[in-house]
Length: 120
Image 1 (cartoon, rainbow, N blue to C red):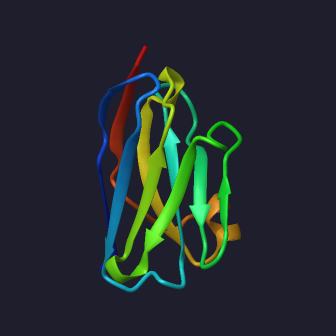
Image 2: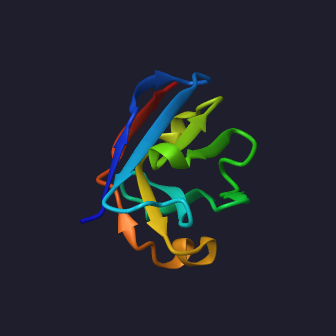
C-alpha cells in the first residue's frame, strides 16, 4: 500500500522560509515523478511543481521562490519555500505519478496535506 506523508508545515511570517518534506512508502519512487500541489480556502487545487528523474518544473506563482528536490535513497521529495507571501497560505499536498506529464493531469498517489500559513 502506497503512502505519502507530508511534514514541515506551520505558521510563518511574510518573507520567511519553510521546507516541506514528503516521505513515500509502499514502493520505490526513484523512477516516478514527485511533486507538490496546494489548495487555498475557496480556491481550486493549484500545481506548485514537479521533479522528474532529471528535470523540474514550477508553477508561475512560485517560480524563482520555491525549489523542489528529492532524495531517492529516502524515498523523499522536498519543497523549499523562500520569500513566502500571504498568498502562499494553503494546504500543501505531495503527489506522485508515473511521469512528469501525467502528474499535472492525474496524479496516481496523494498525501494527506500539510497546512502552511503565512502572516503579513
